[in-house]
Amino acid sequence: MSELGERLRAQGKRLTPQRERVLAAVRALGHGTPEEIAEQVAGDGGAAVPASTVYRSLEALQELGLVSHTHVDHRAPSYHLLEHATHVHVVCRRCGSVGEAPLEIADVLVERLDARLGFQADVAHAAIHGLCRSCREGS
Image 1 (cartoon, rainbow, N blue to C red):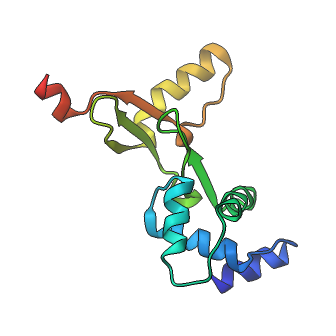
Image 2: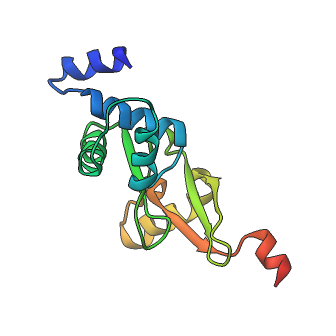
C-alpha cells in the first residue's frame, strides 16, 4: 500500500491510516456493504474506527478511484476494488445469491442502448435480478 500512498501523494491526495484499513477490508471481503466493511475493520486488530469514518472513507476511496460500488438490492451498496469491476452482478430474487458474469456478456445490450438511445451504459455497476439455476430447477 505504500506505493499506492506515494502515487496518491504525488497527485496531492492522501491515503490516511483509516482509509488504508478500509481499503484492506474491501480487498479482504471482495464485495462488502459498509456494515460488513466496518465489521472487518473492527476485527483487524487496530484501534476502533467509528462507522461514520468507514462511510466517509468509502466515499473518499471512491473519489480517489480505488473502490466502486454496486447496488445488488434495494438496501446498502456493495463496495469492491475498482480493479475488480470486471463483471456484471447477477442476483437471485428467490434465494438472494449473488454471482458474477463477465462484462462481455452485456456487449449486445450496451451496443443496442448506444445505437438506439445514444446512451453509454456502464454495466460494471449493474446488478441483474432474476432466478439462479438452482431456484429455476427447484421451481
